[in-house]
Each structure stands twice: as C-alpha cells, then as structure tokens.
Length: 190
Image (cartoon, rainbow, N blue to C red; front, side, top):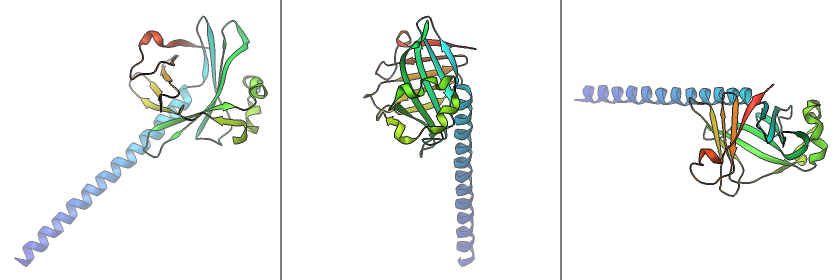
C-alpha cells in the first residue's frame, strides 16, 4: 500500500509540474504575441492620412520617456496645414495585464512643437513637464484579422480608433459600438 501511495503521489506531482510548465509556456507565448502586436502597431501607425476635410499626421518621435513607442499626432484642415485642429502625444506600451495601452497627452506649449513634422529632431528635447496627461483618455488597443482598434478607457473622454490597412478612422461617439457613420475616415497618402 505504501509503495502504491508513493507512486500515486509521484504521478500527481509530475502531472502538476507538467501543467505548470504548460501554463508558463502559454504565458510567455502570450507575452511574445503582445510584444509582436505592439511592434506591428508601431510600424503601421505612422503616416499622413487625409479625407476632404482633414489631414492627420502621425509620426514616431524619439522621446521614449512616456512609453515603449511615442507618437506625435497633428490634425489639420486638409486644405491648409496651418489650421491646426489638435495636437497630441500618444505613448504605446504593454500593460501589466498583457494588453496594449496608449497614453494620451496634450502639449503644454503646442506652438513650440508645430514644426516637429518638418524637424522631427525637435522631439528629442521633449520632457514630461512638456506634457499634460489626459486622464480617462487612455486607449486600449486590440488586434484582429482586419487590423487594430482602440477605445477609451473611460466615457469621460470618448474615443474610438480603427487602423485597417491604409485607412484610419476615429470617432468621438460614446457607447459600446459607435455606428460606422460616426467615424471620420482617412486614407494614407505619401
């Protein structure tokens, strides 16, 4: 009886060790997948996007002070790049739960950074004191077969984004599923 009991305990220990190894492998493969998704999003996001009314410029900047990947977004009128509608800094990083989270920041002195699209080296001097965190505007990014989508972490700052191929769309409509007609569609241009 004692030998059978020891064999049973040994078999149970082996099963538990194997299950633990499988769970650890699943966690590390999930983390690798999220890192790959973050790298893919960071590669696909930059560009000049336009529609008849607006132009959205998204460029990666060398200011890794707020996240793994940092971007400058400038929205202007399509017909006049001097008519700036908004400027933001996005930071993308892996969240503790393994997802991709994007911090959204306003610029304390927006006019200081306006030439950044022509002189990207300007952003090397970007410091945290130059940014104003926009609480509740954090974007939670997910990946799908169509591309990437994001939504605000709270309804205080409703935003939804879709990046699919050469188009990007955004909406400021609250709710679980913003209707397609509420999105501003823009297409990537050289």
